[in-house]
Image (cartoon, rainbow, N blue to C red):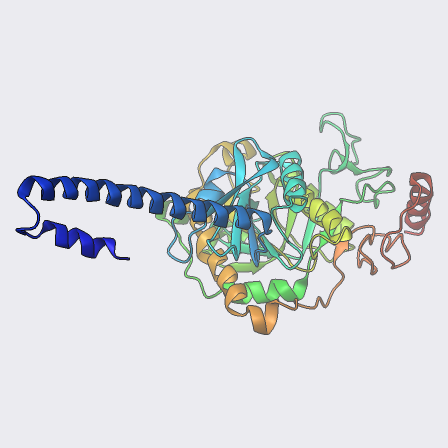
Length: 427
């Protein structure tokens, strides 16, 4: 470009150019320079806009999607040193009105969204995500990363748990405890059954999900590299559980634990309900599930992902259920269930911080070992899917596959229902 050279020449004193004439030329050149600069800005802006348009037409293919349920669980991922999840923000129709965006790193390798709390919000948000044309999720790993209540017989506040089973424990008949038969230990009775200890004779298909145990163990290994947060308030509160040896785990410090999770829109408290749902977990999983954490979303999230897997939109073997413990599901000796519910166990802060501290190790483990381990997928060594066997294979809980171990075919509702009933009668 020659105009800088000409500009310098015009500024030199010269007998050929009187002062007034030289000043006139300089003004003209200034206008020329300004017009050129403005034109360069226009071109640069057009290039950026064109680049943005190109990005919008190409779906983002994240390696990891982090699923949060409410604001504090999501906020803990923003402004962290490991990666910037606010570099790209994609509004997806159908997401929660108060959490309308999916947040991603600049290269799209890691994304995060917040579903809103409880089962309806979780199912609606995840269904909207998997059907969004903005994303290609066929090779994505999904990590549910939220807080939960915890069974003090297995873990304590601040602990990080990884589940193999998610059990929808409240999907049952219910009596008010004051109206239940005298010989019933609880007011909850499995659907279609006549006693709390009978396997449900009516299945809706969402009662139990099982995820990839081989992937879970890899996630646990990565999480154990983290130094977990703990607080004095949490330590002082959990010391109350020391008086009963059955609660020894609840009295100890935070750790990484492999145990299962119970889903219910109802937020319960107390030994009676906790024991009832512990029995439900054991019953629904044929004795293999370990009741440990309590939350409000996971079966809904997993049902949406299962249906998406059936449609070829996601891979159900790429799901991690990570829950950190914020409170106890039952009272300590000498405490009431109400005091347990309405008191402050001091576990909220470490549970939120440990979502990031442990979770980021899992995310980094997947990203860093993508080519060698995760791109091709982690082959499951156990059954994965729902209680019906909708994705193929034979569930190791419940009545077994109602589809004969094959991927669920398209069939009439009446035929499907009859098949379920025949399978349940064999239990």
